[in-house]
Length: 121
Image (cartoon, rainbow, N blue to C red; front, top):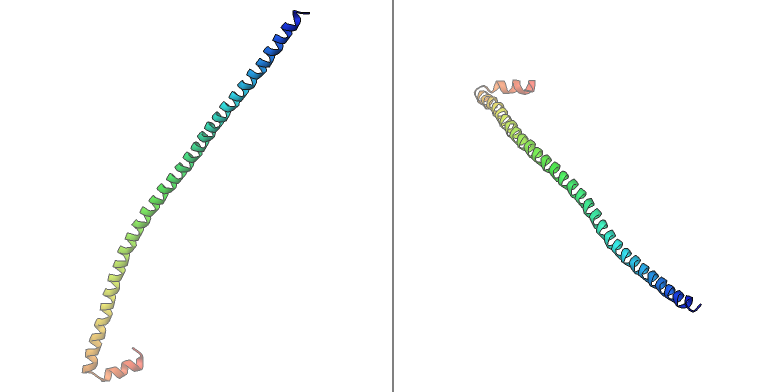
């Protein structure tokens, strides 16, 4: 029995040391997992932000295309507006010419003025 007791004590000490080593290894492993978990989490965040960035860039490209289209439409409308204004001015000029002729006619023939008023010219 004398030999068993020291052997037992040695085995218990070795067991305790093994348990202590196992706990240290678990703590290190958990620390590494936490660090690795943080890194993986950051990688996922980066991937998500890259997706958002691509989405925003696509929207910007679409908006820029729309702006260019709208600017083209605006230039076309400005040109059309100038053309309509020119035609309107031309029509107005045509309308004022007969009026001037009628005034001259009225001055030379006053009796025609009363006929025009009666007929509501």
